[in-house]
Image (cartoon, rainbow, N blue to C red; front, side):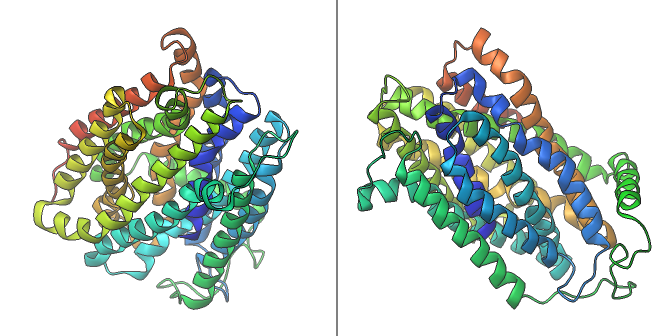
Length: 416
């Protein structure tokens, strides 16, 4: 829940922050490059290290704590950026820090549960991610609505966004510290209670090199079901990133008809899009309560296919929406899809993983999240400028088409 405060504030507000600081629509993708690059580099190594870690604090918890402290500092600094390059640079720090917490968090669920409870565990993960995201995404709108915060002359980023990031930083560190204090971890079977690196048995650089070699080996030796769900992930996350890049701008520009990012209508539209992100997170929170039972009844693959299709319909429907309240229908589908995206792929392939390699495989699986984002950040700006006329509405609809492709690819997977 705490980690999602960081992700939720970032996903709902970074594109508007970039626009407030002067970025053009075709410049937005490259400015998001921090997220995939840090995930690509950090998550597999952190997974490799956490598989081999044991400290008095536990196995995964040291990574939660360090990542949370760094993320909190970055969240406090982000809304005080006065230039575009400052916000882009700080996003690298924020994403790197969140990734340090995030990767061990996925392995944590599998560490503490028997395999027959993985589906329940990961759907509960979706529930609490939904709780955090509901609050985080709605914070700027709530700040404007109930505190009547006025913008300070000479400052580009609204006061409502600043206070939201401060509250999110406090929530992030508080929730992670609570988990660290109250949750017990168990020593990995067959391992002595030691941290190999901390004891100096191998050096820091050698540890990284060993990790890279092992990661490279496991990339080409993934379980068969993981190979197939990875392709589904690729198109799923390509669609999600197009939504996150452009949904806020599309709502402000085409639903609220804002003439420019400097107008009050644009600020109102950006805050409303954050509220819609909060709504899809609310759907996620509620749907997570029943998704596990539905997956037991109809099968995990069938449910994931259904949920991705719902998300595709939701994003494509933006093409015919004219009123801001009609966006609730759009986000209903996205919320259903997001619940499954956060849980079903992990519940599908995690039972096939060796218990002492869960962390590194979770990091490798993250490749199929960050590689599509890298592609989007590097190449989609060119597509926006030369083929889509910088129309953010078209970009969101294309994201829906990507989700539909992912749903079709699900049909290739056979469930045992």
